[in-house]
Structure formats: structure tokens, C-alpha cells
Image 1 (cartoon, rainbow, N blue to C red):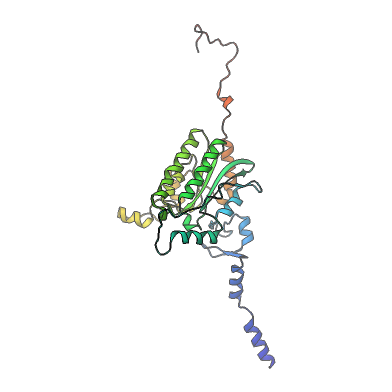
Image 2 (image 1 turned 90 degrees about the vertical axis):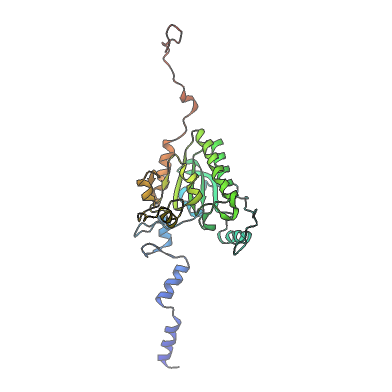
Amino acid sequence: MSLFDWFANRRKAEPTSKERQEREIADGLWTKCESCGALTYTKDLRANQMVCLECNHHIRVFSDERVRQLIDANTWLPLDTAIRPIDPLKFRDRKGYGDRIREMQDKTGLPDGVQTGLGQLEGLPVALGVMDFRFMGGSMGSVVGEKFTRLIERATRERLPVMLVCASGGARMQEGMLSLMQMAKISGALERHREARLLYIPILTHPTTGGVTASFAMLGDIILAEPKATIGFAGRRVVEQTLREKLPENFQTAEYLLEHGFVDAIVPRTQLKKTLAQLIRLHQPVPAASHFVHLPETVSLSPANPL
């Protein structure tokens, strides 16, 4: 073999720059921003809460990462981890519902599309529920409704603020009316939480749509949203066909909803934990003893000297 052949064979064996880049991306060392295309070390992105360092695009994150971002280290207590979905309607389309559930469980490592638990946020005790869009588009089935309801009921008993991170395509069609019932069930638990004069904050992320938007996502005392999140009930095309008119370009975005009074604030993900802590401190439950007014000792409450 000539020296020229040896160099030629070696060059063929070496990966091209494109192959090296694809390999590094596949290994998870780099993350490509879907908005501006910038490549960033995944470690640096995680340190910035998965917000692009170039264009501030909020890259979609899932339930494990949300818990890590919001809850203080070593304080997370998961709840109701043994609740799993069943196939009550024996639903079948191209694939059986039971098969699809098992596929999603293997892919995500989750029993269903939500995680709930108790923890501390900057030292403040909270009840947190996080929807996971990986699991059948974050669709709301019976397990999602049951876990959220149990979380809210426990928070009411223990007088804790509730925060629900919403990311969903809406009700899960494979469970039919059983899925739609969860809207009322969660809303009822939230009403009892409100009657106890406790704080509830939904955080609307991309996307929050369908039955989730039509129920607990819009029932917060203070409703927060991430920048440019898609938030709505029916899809844009359905609304345009129904109204027979062209909608604004920013329709169903967090910014559009803020302008029209449907959300109270848009909070960048890097500021979310700090903002939530401030809101919780401002809305701490008032101790029962402070509801009584202490009158001066010189005041008489006799009929001759009424208040």
C-alpha cells in the first residue's frame, strides 16, 4: 500500500464534521434551539432553566425537570405514585389504548401524564402538580384528575398553597366521558381549597389547551404563563372556520391573553421560582387569632355605651 493510499483510507475512516456534530447532539452534549438554531451545551442550558442563551426561547421541558427547577433539593415527596390508568371503554383505533399506555410508560418511565407531590420552594412548603406532555400529549385522563384532586384535598387539609404546571392537549379521548368528568372533579376540589382561603396558582406552559384550559388552568387566584406559550380551547383553524374570519397572528399566545385579561402575568422561566416564592409570602394564610380586634380596656360594651 502506498503512502497516498494510506492517507486516503484514513480520511475515509474519520467522521466528517457533520457526523461529529450529529454524534455529539445524539449523545446529549449539545442542544439545538428549535427557534434560532443555536447549539448550546446542554449543561449550560440546564443551568439557565432550558431557556436559549441566544434568543430566550423557552425549550419544552418535562415533569422531572420542572420539579428540579421549582422544588428545593432533597425536599420532594412524590404522592400517589401507584395509581395507574386502565382501559374502561376498551378503546381501539389503530392501536389499543392499553398498548399505547404501556408504550408511553416504557418511554417516559411514568405511570401516567402527571407527577404530584409535596416539597419546599425557597423554604416554603407547597403542593405541586406537573403535567408531562410526553405522555400522550399531556392529555387529561382519570389518573390525572384523581392525582390532582388528591393533591388539592391534601393541600386543603394541611393548609398549603397549590401550584399546577399545565401542559396538555386537553381531555383524553380514549376515556370518553370519564375524562371529561375530571374537569368538574378538580374544579370542585379547588373550590373547597378556595373556601379555606388558600392560594392556588396555575402556571400555563406550551401548550395548554382543550379541557384543561376550560377548567383548572383558568381558576387560579393568580394565573401565570410562560412567554409565547400557546393557550386556548379549540384550535386556531377551528376558531377561524367557526367565526369565518382571520385571527391575529399572536392569537392564543400568552402575550395575547395577557393583553385581554385572561392571565395575570407572563413570567420567564428563569424568574419563576423567585416569583412564586414572593407570591406565596404575600398570601400566607392569616392566623385565626389575628381575626379578632382587641379593643382598649376603657371601652365599655354595655347597652348604655354601644359601639
